[in-house]
Image 1 (cartoon, rainbow, N blue to C red):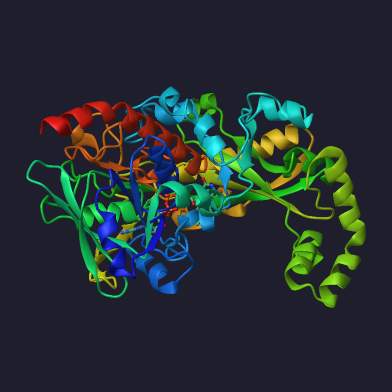
Image 2 (tube, rainbow, N blue to C red):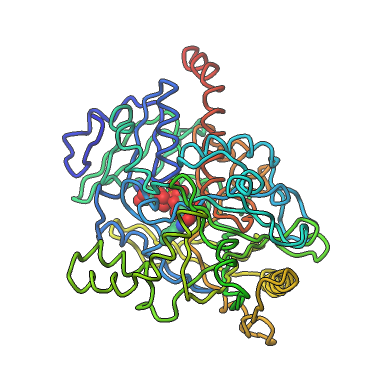
Amino acid sequence: MPYADFNRPSTVAALEGHDVCIIGAGAAGILLAIRLTSQNRKVLLIESGDLVPDEEKQALNEIEQTAKQMRDPVWNRKRIVGGTTTAWGGQSLPFSPLDFVRRDWVTSSGWPIEYGDVAKYYDAANAFLHVDNWNYDSDLLTRFGVKYPLIEGGVNYHFSKWAPEPNLHKLYRRDLKKNVTVLYNAHLVRIDLHENGRVQSLSIANFVGFIHRLSVGEVILAAGGIETNRILLLNDHQVAGGLGNHSGWLGRAFMDHPSIVGGTIVPNDLKQFQSLFGTRVYRRRRYSTRLSAPTAWQKKNQLLNVSATFLFPYPDGLSDPFHAIKQLSRQKRIKAVFEVIRHFPKLTQSALALAMHGYLYKPGSSAVFGMNVEQEPLFGSYIALAKSRDQFGLRKASLHWTISEKSWQTAVLFAKRVKVELERANLATVQLNPQLYAKNLDWENQFSDVNHHMGGTRMSSVASQGVVTPDLQVWGIPNLSVASCSVFPTSSHSNPTLTLLALCERLSERMKKSMLPRILSRLLD
Ligand SMILES: Cc1cc2nc3c(=O)[nH]c(=O)nc-3n(C[C@H](O)[C@H](O)[C@H](O)COP(=O)(O)OP(=O)(O)OC[C@H]3O[C@@H](n4cnc5c(N)ncnc54)[C@H](O)[C@@H]3O)c2cc1C
C-alpha cells in the first residue's frame, strides 16, 4: 500500500505494524522516510494535505497574530504531499561555525552540538537536494573563473546553490512509492502517552469525519516550523502546557530572518557588476552571490549574522526580456512572440554572456541589494494557542513574533559595510535605504518575513533549557523526535532547509545506531 488516501477508510487495517510514523511529508519527512526505509524499517508517512493543492487543507494554516505581522501565514507553508518544497526556491546555504557557539552578546545563543556535528552531514544533504558538493566559496570561484572581487576580510564573498528540482515530492515520488506507506488526507489530531512515558498512539482524522487511533513505535514530528509547535502545545491532556513543555520553552524563541532592502546600487559597469554579483549558471545549475558578515566583524561590533543578496530588477516589468520569454512559454500567443522579438537585442546580449561567461546578464536593469538578518532567540517571541479553532475543533496557533533591536543595528551597520566595500573596490556607488539611517522608531516594521520559520522546540543540553535533546528526542519521551527548523536554537542568516536536512541525516544515523539495543529491549519486554 504505497500511497493511500485516508479519505477512503478501507485502508485502516494496513496502517498498523509500522516501525516509524512520520508526521508531515515535507522536506524533512521525505528525507527521513527514505533514509529509514533503507535501514529496513517500515515507515508510515502521514500527511494532512492531498496530492494536489487544496484550499480546505491550506486553511489549516490559519493563525492569529498578536505582535509583528507575518505577511501571509496561510500561503507561506503548504499542506500537500511535498510540503513547502512545492513552493520554495530550493536555495541552499550552510550555517557558519560562529552560529553554533555561545556568544556573550547574543541572548540564549549556543547550540548544544558543534558546527562539525552538523557540517559532516552537509554533503549528504546537498546530495539529497541534487546540488553539488563543492564548497560554497573557493571551489565555485575557481570553477567560474572569477577572482575574489573585494578586499578579503571586509565581507565574505560566497555563493548559495539552487536545487535543480526544488519539489522534493516530484524528485522522490518513485522511492516513496516503492518503499514507504504515504497516507495523505490524514491529519494528526492527538497524541497519547503510555504510563511509561512513551507515545502509545496517534489519532489520525480524515476530512470526511472519520478518526482512527493508531498504535505506534517511533514517532517523528516533521510538520514544519509552526505546526510542530502547535501539535506539541495542543497535546496538553497528559502533560501540563503540552508535550515537551517541562521547561516552559515550548513555543518560545520563534525566529524568521528579518529582511530589508539595503540600498540601490549604481554600478560603474553594469555588465561587469552582474558578472560578479548576478546569478551564475554552471552545468545547468544556478548559483547566487552572497556577501555575509565575517566572524571578526560580528565579534567586534557585538552584532548578529547577516548577508546581502543582489537583485537586478527592471523598474517597469515590461522591459524585462526574461519576463517576455516566460510569458511566451506560458501563453504561446502571437503577442508574446512580438514581445520576444522586441527584446531580441537584449536577449542576444544575455545569451552571449551566458554562453561565454556563465552568468545571467540583464542589460539595462537597475540594481539593489537586500539583507537577511539573524534574529536573537527571544523568550518573548513565541507560538502559543489561539482562542479560535480550526475545522477539527483544535485551537489554532497564535504567533507573537518579536525581534530585538540588535537585528536592526546589524542591518544598519552591515548595509554601510556593503556600501563601503563596493565603493572601495570601485565597482559602484551605493545609495543606502533612507530608512536605515533615519532615526527610525518604527524599525521593527521595516523588516519583512521570508518564510523561514525556526525555533519553538529548541534543542538543549539539559532538559531545563529546551524542548528536545541534542539527538532531537523530546526530553522525557523516548520514542518522540522532532525534525523541523523549530529545533534550531539560533537562526544564522542562511536559508534554513539545508541545515534541517543535515540534522535529519544525523537523526537517521542515530536511529540506525540505536536499532539493535531497541530490538533487544523489545524482545526482553
Ligand atoms: C516561497 C518560499 C520560498 C522558500 N525558499 C526557501 C529557500 O530557497 N531555501 C530554504 O532553505 N528555505 C526556503 N523556504 C523555507 C522552506 O520551504 C522550509 O524551511 C522547509 O520547506 C521546511 O520543511 P519542513 O519539512 O520542515 O516543513 P513543510 O515543508 O512545511 O512540511 C510540513 C508538512 O507537514 C504537514 N503537516 C502539518 N501538520 C500536520 C498534521 N497535524 N498532520 C499531518 N500532517 C501535518 C504539512 O501539511 C506539510 O506538508 C521557503 C519557503 C517559502 C514559503
